[in-house]
Amino acid sequence: MTQSATLRDFICAEFAPDLKPGELPADLDLIDSGIIDSLGVLKLVAFLEGRFDIAIAPEELDADLYRTIDSIEALIAGKRIGSAA
Amino acid sequence: MAAIASAAHRDAAFETEPDLAAELTDGLDRWADAFNRGWAEDDWSGRFGEERWRALCAAGLTGLVSGTAFGGLGLSAHQTARILERLGTICHDGGLGFTLASHLCSTCIPIERFGSSPLKARYLHGLATGTIVGAHAITEPDSGSDAFAMRTRMLRDGDDYVVSGEKCFVSNAPIAGLFVIYARSDPDKGALGGFSALAVERDTPGLSVGRSVRKMGLRTAPTADLHLDDVRVPAANLIGREGQGYSILDYVMKWEVLSVFAVQLGEMRRRLTTAIAYARERQQFGVAIGSFQAVSHRIADMHIRIESAANWLARVAAAVAGGGGASLETAAAKLFISEANVATALDAIRIHGGAGYMSETGIEAGLRDAVGGLIYSGTSDIQRNRIAAMLGL
Ligand SMILES: Cc1cc2nc3c(=O)[nH]c(=O)nc-3n(C[C@H](O)[C@H](O)[C@H](O)COP(=O)(O)OP(=O)(O)OC[C@H]3O[C@@H](n4cnc5c(N)ncnc54)[C@H](O)[C@@H]3O)c2cc1C
Image 1 (tube, each protein chain N blue to C red):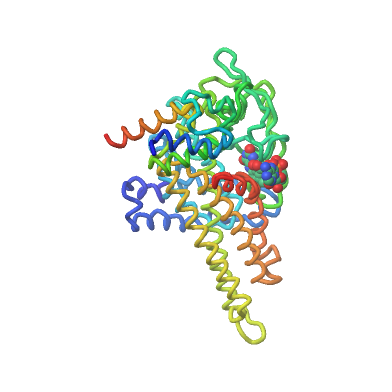
Image 2: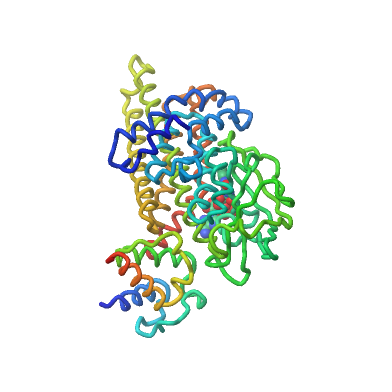
């Protein structure tokens, strides 16, 4: 499964059981739309750390980083580049 | 500060060098008398022991987490936890340990991690040396567990923020020189992005500190409410960015669990040692009470709780050090250790019988102090909610 599919599966299963993973627009604002709330961000962070083997710093508990599928993927990608360097 | 500082500054590989660890923690034992002098009378009258606080400052404990550039020791999460645990073991004044832990996590931690350079320069030295006592204000009369329902607001006006609202149950408020106030900075946003943290000096016009409130336990750790009436605070006193209050508080809460409950872990260890000694020495029916399984099993349970608590605390320390989210670990550690502390304190009273119930022996204070741990830093119910949520419920 691709990273994007894994992420979509998790978000739908945890926060939006009525949505199908493939139908979740990559630019949908997950926070303003109410799909992910403040506790949801903590759950998402725990999932990202466990699943993608990354560490998310306290400063990165920032709503903007988790707003869309695109922004979350960018966060993961940035961490992976950082750890490969 | 010299007592423990010399070892800390040589510390790079503290975690793997047990000798240095021992030097740091053992250095504290010399201060035991100074930390304990007069505490029982003060616990009874609800007085903050200023002279005991000064001893903590002199031992360097107020500077554990602040950077060396500001007169602190700049210790890691593991090191800090280990030293605070030792403090709990030697210091009978539970309120003093609580005051110190509140001081460290309320102000030193957020300013050290998120503060601007000028903010650090302005406050960290005073906080590290303990000449400024720190406190933080989150809870309000209508928002406790639901912390981000807080109504205290901060509005930008030129180079200042103007803050208004009510805060309650603020630990250290009667003695604090600096408060970190959490307030709503954007009424259109929720917990994420709508709140900020501001460093507010005690003598800022419009800020008033209520009378010291009486409590069940932790009586030497003074508590009061705050009233903020159009308090004008320089925008430069913003900690981190505007809207970063949620992430700052999340980080602070991890440190709060680590530091407050490291002290409690030490207190539990002391309680166990005392209970074992008493169970060996106290004779009834012609034998030591420790030979009764009812007593020895209670001691076995105390031991298991303490070692489990130590494991949970180590997981929080590792998470804080590694920079990870660790929301589940923190909630589980807080829940487990606070409940273990109450259970252990009650067991200690049972083992000591009537003597345990009498204040003179100093054993009952442990239970009164422990109960607060079920409530502050998020109640046990809230921790269970959080753990369940992290498990997908
Ligand atoms: C010793 C001590 C020191 C403190 N120090 C500070 C401090 O320095 N700064 C500060 O800002 N605050 C401080 N507090 C306040 C503390 O954080 C709050 O008391 C705590 O968060 C609980 O809020 P509350 O008292 O309003 O209780 P409430 O939130 O009203 O809770 C009442 C009861 O309802 C339960 N409950 C509430 N919501 C839920 C839910 N969703 N699910 C299940 N059960 C629920 C609670 O578990 C509790 O049993 C301190 C408190 C104590 C006791």
